Image 1 (spheres, one colour):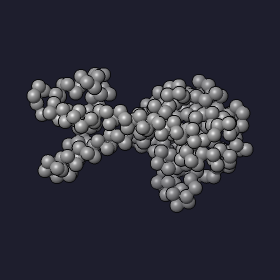
Image 2: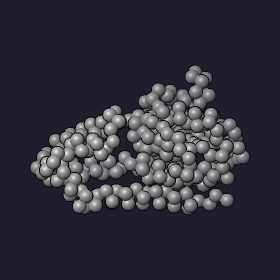
Image 3: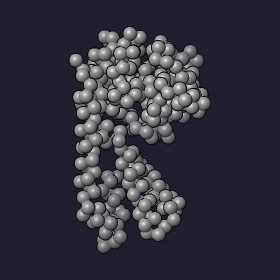
Length: 276
């Protein structure tokens, strides 16, 4: 625990995009730099992040010795060497939090000392602006108190839901990858504005604010998306003509297939690592 605040010290192992997003979001949510540390194998990247955020870069041994919570944010293919390095360094009550897409808690529990609590998390990159959507699931040794710690940590960077681990691959496909789908759609709509003769900067402002406004309506009105869409869709108007083209080109079916493909890939990542 950090002496000044009584809050757990957090080490983010792997300061890639999602690791940096979490660090940035935690700072923005009120965490102090002395409550945080990170590991990063690329020295220049580590120096850059320390300059940017003031957070200490450490090695795995220091992180294991000093942190109450170890947040694993490495790429799935790098997990086994990391767990081999961690295994002789930690023991309960150190809490391990996995942000690695597709990796089950059972993998960690087999590789780490008996009784180490593990919580699986699927966050997303809006953590950078305090608007993440994170889903958390306990492993076999994690209890309500561990979920409370993780939920409190992640609440600083957005919203949190608890789900059974069996649903995590679906969560990964839906909200973990979800921001990319919205960015893709916004990119296409900006290009459409340019095609119709608008300057890029005007098209960007129109679409980005429309996206922000639409998301706010969804979040605050409580109305079903169909109701909100129908409110914009006048009989024989411009919107219904656009919707007809989207349906004609199978956009809805393509989106369903895309999310299923992301779910399947998440499952494949889990199967790629031997648990026994």
